[in-house]
Length: 77
Image 1 (cartoon, rainbow, N blue to C red):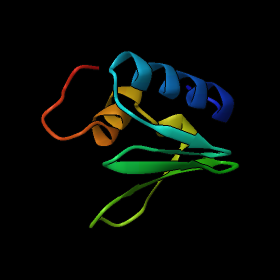
Image 2: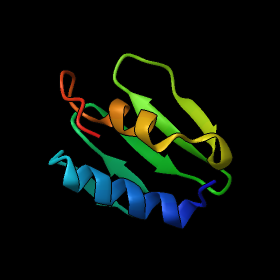
Image 3: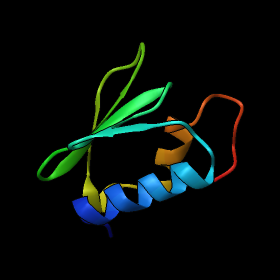
Image 4: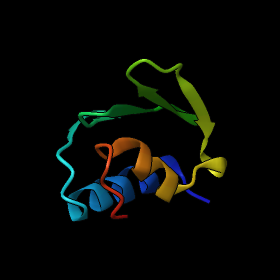
């Protein structure tokens, strides 16, 4: 199970390892494909053309989150 701070750190590390360009501004991480906003009890995943998804931190799967943030066609997690 992840907390907000740990998840932000791990996500930034994994995106860097996968060489996915991203920017981090406060509680938000953005890639070309999606953005994640870290709120008090959940994170919000926003993808272009899709509805916002609110995920409680205890239900977040880091590998699935990385797939949502990587450009389509790249599957190195």
